[in-house]
Image 1 (tube, rainbow, N blue to C red):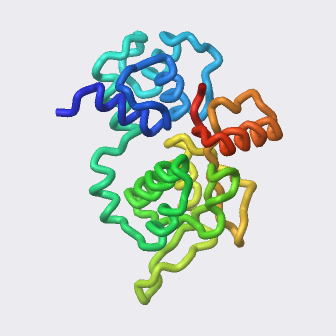
Image 2 (tube, rainbow, N blue to C red):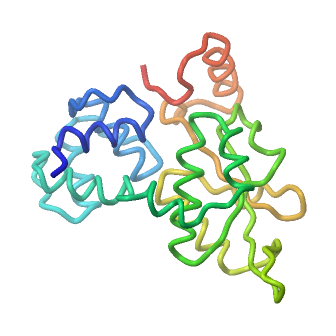
Length: 219
C-alpha cells in the first residue's frame, strides 16, 4: 500500500515544487492552485485545508487526515496513468510531448489521457509549444474517418468537454485565442502572478528563464 507521504510527494511533483513529503503551507497553497486555478485570499493554512476538503467532499475540519490525501491523490494523480496512457499512445503526441517544456509536459500528457478516457482523441499541435515561455499549448480533436485514419475535426462539442478537463487539472482555457484555423489554447498561469499585470508577468518569466529558475515555483 502506498504511504501517505508518497502521495504527498506525487502531489508536490505535479505542482512543480520540491517533493519532500512534508505537507507544508507551501504544499497546501500549490494543491489549492491545482484544484481552483487561483490562489486563496485567506492564506491561513487551516482555512486553505478546509476549503480544499469541502471541494473534494471529505470532512472539512482543517486536519489533513489520511482520507484527505487519498482523495487528493485519486483526483489529481491519475492512478495507473502511465500504464493506461500507453493504451492511448499516438506517435504524433509522443513527438510533441518530448519537445514541450518540463512545466507544460505533465499537464499536456494528463489532458491527453483524461480526454482519451472520455473517448476523445486530442493531439498537441505543432509549432505552438514554445509560445508563452513554454507555458501554453494548442490542441486539436481528431477522429477516425471511414478508412480508419485520424483526421482533424474543426468543430465539435467535444472541445467544451476537453476545456473542462483542462480546467480540472489546473489549466486555463483561452477560448478567444485560436490559431491555425481553430485550435483552442491552454495556458498554465503561475500562482505567483495573480496580482501582476501582463507586462510584469512577462518580465518575471524572462528573469526566471535567464537565471534558469523554475517558472511556476513560489519562492
